[in-house]
Length: 402
Ligand code: PMP
Image (cartoon, rainbow, N blue to C red):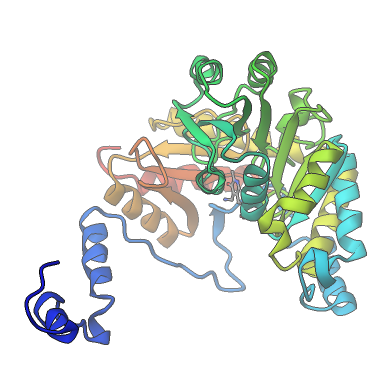
């Protein structure tokens, strides 16, 4: 900078902008909110009341276990026995026998060598992706993977190729043209917006042909797919495979909260030593661990629950298709119904809510293809009359041009 002849203070006076008064510091947020408003992307929190009797087609409680007395009761008992919180991270004071028991049971149920419990599915994904990759590796992903996996990829410092949705040839091409020797393919099993299934056996084969590991987020498959709900990885014959790692959440089929990584023992050991979202995070609360364990027990004793979910999903999707909507035929519990615009999707979901039916509403940026949708989820405990009500309300509330 040229010397203007004055001292430092004079220079700053001339060249620096006037300081922002503190009350204007966040003014830029209002401008951003205005832009989101114009694009129909403002989001609303709609708290449920405790006795809410709405028909819920928006949650992820696929087996209807979140309010099951055996599950909620186990949570309450564990809070009284172990405390409301776990008091620390797993490597300090937070590891409880409950965690170890849950890890053992999850691994046994899913046919994995070992499991590690995290405080959420989001932190399980962050931890698994970052610990199993790095600047010396390549990651190849389907571009519709869950946001938590995307964040893991961003944090990983790996070379990243995010390819077109469900495009096996593109994955194979990215693997064969990668510049780093170590590689990880990252995918959802059941994609969270449209509910379609990734071609897991073919992906595993492509990984093996190209010396890559496969990481599958089975959040929406676990508890719903497989003979008795062991998940999509198990159903694909990949449980216990030495080169496959699975992540799950405890907050969907198990009706609890938390997440887990399942895989080869040495992978789990590596995560304990290196996964930052495991090491630096307070351990899963005792109530959540106990609820997940109890829910797993229910799933074992009622192996028909998963097939009830699939039947409900198939029935609802067919009825909506027959009613004239553009509907994905579900591979698991998630059904998506196309809406003409973000605004129409929001209004449609709001009208359904007024009629006592809660549906999810997905808009950009949650849907990378830009098509706004209603996202419907089913549960094992839905009755035929619930499904009839759902179709009637969704039809009567539909926007004119859907
Ligand atoms: N993966 C997928 C595919 C999900 O849908 C979700 C939850 N929406 C998560 C991970 C995150 O799990 P959690 O809610 O337990 O953090």
